[in-house]
Image (cartoon, rainbow, N blue to C red):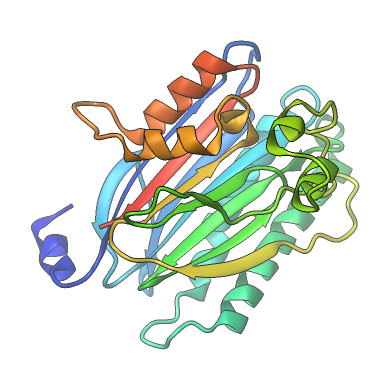
Amino acid sequence: MSKTELKRAAGGHSLHWHGLTDAGRVRPNNEDAFLGLKFDATGVQHLGKVGEAATELADFAFAVSDGMGGALAGEYASRITVDKITTLLPHSFQRPARQTEAAAGHTLTKLFREVHRALKYLGDCYEECAGMEATLSLCWFTPGRVWFGHVGDSRIYYLPAGSGTIRQLSLDDTHVGWLLRQGQINDREARTHPRRNVLQKALGGGNQFVDPQVGSVPCEPGDQFLLCTDGLVEGLYDHSLVDLLRAPSAGGDNSARRLVEASIARDGRDNVTALVIEVR
């Protein structure tokens, strides 16, 4: 972060983020993708895998996507999904006006539907892209509040400052996820269920319409947000996520790297992506 940004952050907030994706130990290619953006009324900037910036004069968006489809269609699907955010979301920068719940929800719903239409169009036009689908989990950071949108079984977690309890903000769009929320199975049964990775809702593919889950939570210094694909939590329970997020970083180590490496060591059958954002 530049000296100018640090001065602007005085008395305000900054974001510190780090992300990592890995193909895992089994799959030959990586169908996951993640994205970080900074945008204001003048333009949009792609963020690196690791960084820090003040939030006083700009909004930030972070997203993960898991693509599905034959050949390389899954890779295309996740990349197209996150790239679409770059062109669509920055148009919604509204400062100094305050963002409202209804306006933010409308913006995110429109974005998800546009991505869905783009994937369906490409799938219908090109044989190599036929049937391609993608999940999308997105967090949009504005002063004091995080707006989120979600479709699929990637996840958004929220770890409040000073809390030992992590909260999953997103709802898994799977039948197994529904069974878990209804109390018909427990977490351990959900993790070993043979249909745990079968999606009921995704962007693209044969779905005619897609309505995302949208919502928001307040954010304060010390809060952490984890966006991840389903491969990350195949081998990690919630208590492990908390321990790895809370562990101190040193040198080139960070919590995204710790999460990905721990997940691969314990499972590693799927692609694994973690994107961690901390409010400071």
